[in-house]
Structure formats: structure tokens, C-alpha cells
Image 1 (cartoon, rainbow, N blue to C red):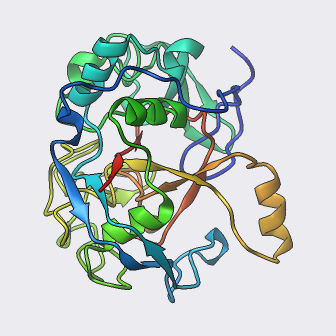
Image 2: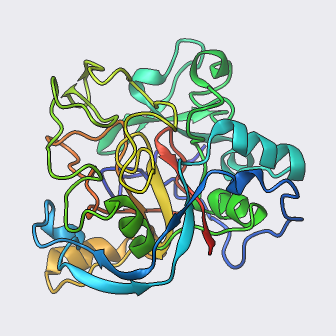
Image 3: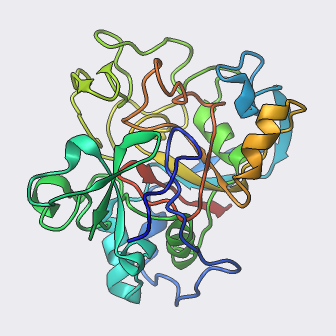
Length: 316
């Protein structure tokens, strides 16, 4: 294994691996159409993107603007382990984590059976684990305690997500489509349910961190890692877990229109990064306040972790 990689952003470290470019690998389309069976129709029109009240100004969350969108359908949930398994069985696709032979696991989920690991410089709670894949999420021998059919598939790269979406007859959402769907018709709100702020004890509308990151998670919302993809109350469009649970890949390149020198310098090391939306079960306001609709993160397309998933869109 090469030297431990460095973190380029707080949310998902880059593995420093060469990910594939160009068109996604092509497959015979899923003949069953099951991947689209729970897709929800989202109305088109003038969609809101961004916010007037950014939580992290240097991330490019503002300004609030309107984008014209056509109607589209989007998965009510992120793609689950069971759904991804059908794709693997049908195509014999090999994910990038499997090709490279290792992936990132959050420190508290590294069991004794895994052995020695190395941390990511600057965010040592991310550990490089040999043999961690979408099936053995936390490393070899961990599937029995960590893999559940109805939970979001994780340990998938941007290319893996794009390959699944192509097989399912769809594609990854744009950032504008994702935000429009997440708002559920409520307008410029912070969260899919409105503006009520989650906390560590009583207001628990989504699966995020409760406690002191990264050492203590109380699990007050009922989950220490991922929750079932169809859990917590859906938003106004009937979509589940738009924020929290797992980060969601989008199709868009990560860009920030900024004149600030430190922002421009930061972006130089993020060429080709993709925009991820929604935050994850590892987000807490004290560290990563990105479980908001307008929040965004730049993620290396090679990144595979225990908190990165995706959902699919289809044209209407």
C-alpha cells in the first residue's frame, strides 16, 4: 500500500487512486425495471438552488437562484444493498474498492478481526482497511454485523454509482435536481422538513451524529451508523433521508465561484471532484454542518467510504 493519503475535505478523503474517466461502462439494461419501481415524479419549473443564509460561506452555498428544470423521477430512497446486489449479480461488475483492494472505514467501526490499519493524515478517524468493499463494509469478516439488505449501499465510488444508474436506465442527479427534490415544495428552507434544527436529544428528524465528534456518538436518533434507506419521515415529495444517513453522489463537477485566495488555492487540489449532497450519519454541527439542503461537499470520484451512497434519476 502507498503512503497514507491526505484529506482534501472534511467529509470524504481522497484515496489518491486513478479513477476511470469517460463514459460509464455499458450493460444490458435491467429487464425487470425494479430499480425504477419506487421512483417519485418531481414537478418541473423554476427550481431553487442555494440559499440566502449560507451555513458555510466558503462552500459556495449562496446565492439563492432559480434554475429551470424539466419534470423527472427520482428514487424515493438511496440505492440499497439489496438493489446493488441485483446489479452485481446481473452484470458481474467489480467495484473500484474491490479493484484497488482497500477502502476507508470510520475508526469506531474497525473491528479486532481487521488487524492494523493506518489513518488519513489530518482526519485520522478515517482508516485504510484492506479488503473493505460494499459487501464487507468495514473489512473482511464484518458483513454479518454491518451489512443489511435495506440499508444504503456504501463503499461505492462515483464511477460505481454511475455504472449502476446506467444499468437501471437512469443517471445521477444534477445538484439542481437534487436540491429541488430535497425541498419537497417548501422553498428556501434549510432541511427537507423545514427549518427546525436537529439537536442531540429531542429534535431527531434524521440520522446524524449526536455527541462529541469523533469520539462519542450517543446514537440518540437510534443509529450509530447507517439507518434503513426508508426510515424517518419522508419530505413533501415522499423522499426519504435526503439529509443525514449517507452522502449522495451527483453528476456535477464541484465548483465554487469565489474570489477568495484561500478558496481558489483549496480548489486547485480538487480538480475533477464531484459534488456530494446531504451529509451523513457522521455529520454534527460542531464539525461538519453539511446536513442541509444547500450544503455541499467536493468529493474525489475515487473516494469509497462507509458513508457515501447515491440515488438515481430518470427522465419523465
